[in-house]
Image (tube, rainbow, N blue to C red; front, side, top):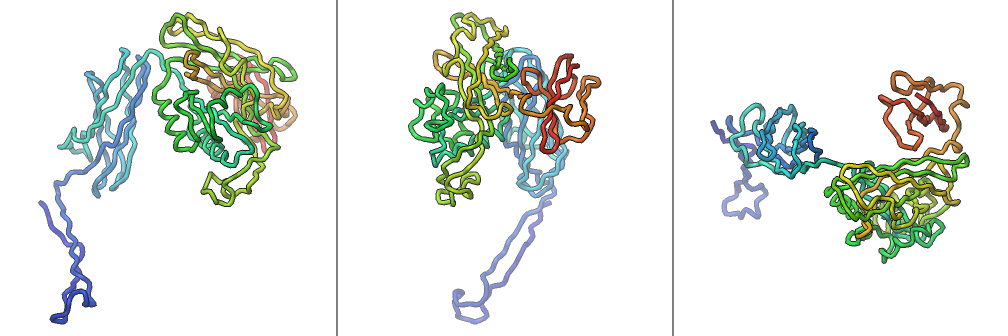
Length: 459
C-alpha cells in the first residue's frame, strides 16, 4: 500500500493584508513529500562487466560492478550469466549496500574448450532474495576471447627526458605512478638526452621526439606524446587491452667474479606458426637510484601547478633517478636471427647473449635487464619482460651477521633471527615465491635494519 507523507511544512502566509510577498518577513510555503510502498523494488543496477582473455580449457573469473539506487538496504543479490549459447550459471553475494554504494563481484566461470570469441551476458536476477521483475533491463554484455595460448603481456614506455629540462618532472612523476599502479604489466625506460646520463646506443629513440618530455608506447609512431599521467594511462590501457600473440621471458646472471659481464637468456613462444617470420630481441640495462645529478624543476613554488610534490621542491632538485637506460644491446633495433624465421606454434625458442656492462654504472645492486621482442617489419615492440640482477659483491654476506641463519625445510626457506624482509631469487636473478621450491641453488636476500645480506643456499 502506498502512503503519502510530509517531510516538512513551513508557513509563509503574510499576516499583513495587501502587503506583497516580496515585502513579507516570512518564508514562502515549502512542502516536501515522499512515497512509501511496501512493494517498491530494491533498485540495484548492474554497472559493468569486464571483457576476458582466457586460455582454452581453463576456468576464468567474471568481474563486474553493481550500484545501489535506493534507500532500501541491499543485503544480497544474485547474478546470472550466459556465455555464448552455452549453459549459464548464477551466484549469490552477501553484501551491505546503501544508496549510491558500489560493490564488485567475481564469479568463477567453467572452462571453455573451443577457441573463439564469445558474447557473455550477465544481469541481476534477485535482490534481497526476491526475483527482479525487470530482469534484463540492466543486463550487460562483454566479450570473452578464448585462445590456446595466453601470454603475460608487458607494455613498454620509452621516455625522452633530461636533467636540464624543467618540464621533465611531469614524466618522472607519471612514470613513477604507472610503475606503482601497474607493477606487473608496465615497463618504463628513461632515455636521457644531452646530459651526463645519455646512453649513446639509445640515440635512435630521439628521432620520435620534438619536445621534452616525450614518450612513445611500444614504439608505435601513433603513440608519441607528452607524458601526462592521464594520457600515459589511457595509451597503456589501450595497448594492454589488445593483448599479444607472442610471449617472452628473460633471465640474467653475472658471468664473472668482477660482475662486469652478464649472460642474458630470452625465451620466446608464439600462438601461431609462421614462415619468414621477422622478429628480433634487444636487451636494455636499467639502473635505479642513480645519484649525483640535479633535475631542473619548472614546477618549483607551484607557479606552474602541482606535479607530484615537485611544486614543493626548489628549481634545481638533487634526487635519485630511476629506470635510467644505461645501454641497449646488441642494438636499438635488436639482433638479427635472435628469433628463428620459421616458427612453430607453441614451440619455445631460446636466445642467449653476453653483454658487458658500461663503466658509468654506479651500483650493480640496482640493475635490471629488460628484453624487448620487436617486430622487424613495423619496428614496434610486441612484448617484453624484465628481471632484476643480484650483485653479491655490493652487499654483506649473511655469515657476517652472527644472529641470522638460513635453512630449508619442506621446500621452504626459513630464517632464524630478527630481520625486516626477505626475497628469494634464482641464480638467473628471477624473484620467486617461497613455496614448493625445487631442488636447485637459490639466492636469499635479507634486509635487517640498514644492512643487506645475501645467502646462497642449495635445496
